[in-house]
Image (cartoon, rainbow, N blue to C red; front, side, top):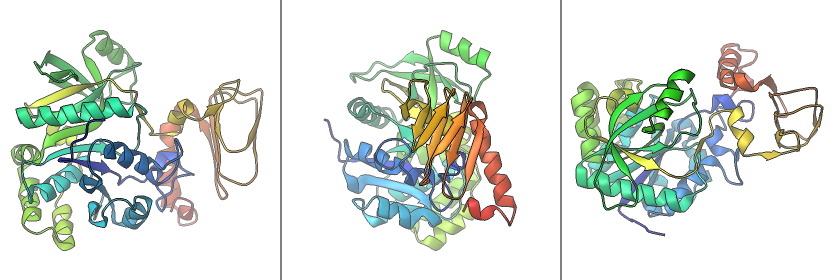
Length: 361
């Protein structure tokens, strides 16, 4: 497999995984759990990066609360590569932080940024596309985003409308980006897919850090002025001061949707966003009635359910279809599969009550 020891990779791992309650808690977020596969999500992401770059160039951005556990989960990474955000401020400040830290050493550093919660089994194809994206980003001073060929008119993802293809010697196909489209209605998603020119926005990016910071200067200049402080002094106190002034905004809204130097790489690898309980249905073992399960269970006259049992006992279901049932030693979740996104609302309600907040901490 090709390797590029000069490519930096950053795994964004600051979320709490509220939609995976009750397995996931603020003290053990989903990226530190073995939700899919035999490794934690964060370990899978880091190991995937290590296939094509050196481990001393792999960085993890997480929260202060999760930093120690993240280091324990990734003992092969240098401790200084675990970077703690003082507060959660969405993806733009996170990317600005790691870009500023690297730019202090060299503004020509190339950086790839990925979320911690992706399932990507095609390691070789993924590595090739990331390395090709690094080459295109460097040669064109471009902000490269990795687009995924849509398999269905999903309404939970943003879409990228591709324009003219680039003339490139790379095996990976690249196109200019015409437009970013936020999570569309199903009919609109079907129309977009029918064009043959759209991709899911997977939240993966590759760029020269100097080019990304130039975009920050152009589109969010007030925060860029704060980031410049980090290039001179990256102490915990300075980073906290910078974050206190940081807007809570995604990199898509802040930069990618506005910039005119955005290129999309045609992602040809299998991909899934491990974002909620409904997403594990494709990854857990299924019985003859398409019930996906992890842990002990018995099902009677039930189909297409997701059953997770972390406890020592057994889960029994009767006459259930398209239902999520998840059990731990201190909590049980039951909800329709099409309400999986609303688990976050339940967690927020539990956290707001002094009597129940212990069950989400």
